[in-house]
Image (cartoon, rainbow, N blue to C red; front, side, top):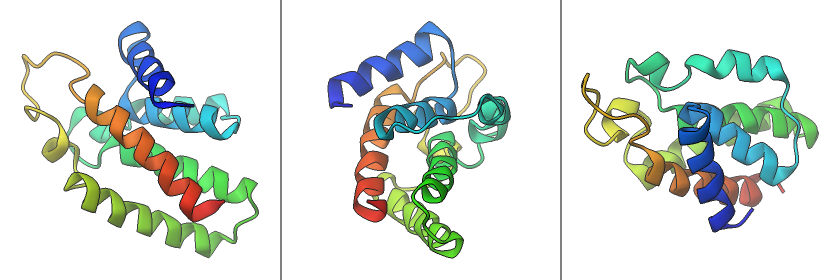
Length: 139
C-alpha cells in the first residue's frame, strides 16, 4: 500500500464504517502484508481505542502490537523475539509520537463535545511508521 492508498483506507474506515483506531491499524497492516485476520480478532479489538475511550494505551499501538504478534507467528519468529520486537515498537513509537497514551496523543484530549476520529492525520503517519518498522524488524 502506498501513502495515498493508506489515506483512503484510513478515511473510509473512520468515516465510512466508523471503526476505531486499533481496527484501522490492524486492517491496514493486514492488507499491506497480506495477512488474514480472524473475525474474532476484530470482535476482540472493538474496545481497543484507549480502553474504550478511557484514554489509556493508544489503539494505534494496540493494533500494531496485535499484528506484530500475528505476523511473528506467520514468519516463524520465536515468541521471545516477537516480545522483544513489541518492546522495540513501543519504544520507537514513543520516540516518534511522544507517548503511548491515547489521552496524551489525541488532539484535544477527550471532551464530550469532541467530534469523532480526531486522530485521522496521526493515524496516516502511524500506519506508515508501523509498516516501515515491521519491514525493518521482521523481514
